Image (cartoon, rainbow, N blue to C red; front, side, top):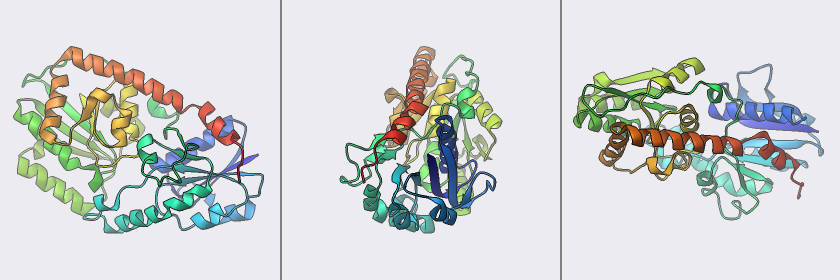
Length: 352
């Protein structure tokens, strides 16, 4: 039996692209013949133009559609006679992007109009319970499953554990706070800058390292002006996109990873960091908070968030307990994304 995986875009290094290629590896391990299709892609040996899918697919095949943005092919895909699976990554609310990325905001708004059409797929698999909750009630049914968008064979999950270090809130001890992800408006990097400024105001030698692509010039200019206004420009580093080895080194050198994004479908960096033994904090009300240890959820108020982080950085036992809890939670989440979970999805009966 063949499994055909498709998405509008499949680029190496991008979260959706990585997930599609990871699914292909899983399916091959499970004995499937796998083909991967996209409208736009950079892997010309492993990915084929999406129009070819309609020429090749037949009723005995499995189709997995990866959905993260409005898809002009959606009606054609859901009309195919084979079993159809949808992996739903979630869509960023348009209002979070409107100021700095109006074109993307329009695409996200158009995506919401397609959500009802996803009920043509069975099963639907969401990347988190938070993401599933964004679907209409007639789509978010009891048959919907949640499988995290990660695979235990990913490089970050093979990295060595972080060596434990002494933790102190004294002025002379430097603490690098890390954020990882695309530098786009809804990630709220300005809030991370606020938190670092508050930590410095409390006498902590804190800095911020920002890892992720940064192609939105107006937003980058806004962040630079914000850091300058708070007097912390010298303590903010924008590292851009980095390779896996550099990312792992960033995890090892940091005191904590924070996610203050206003919207997350899952937040893979939190899981990667917890698995290595780094303290992780995530803003409440997003899927990032679903991934991290419950005690490490950050309030929306940046001053209160800084105070919560400081409570861990200045107390070695609390920090060690948080790291231990994070490691256990990461192991549990990775187990839920094992090949056996996907075997159950692929083997589910075709109801249409």
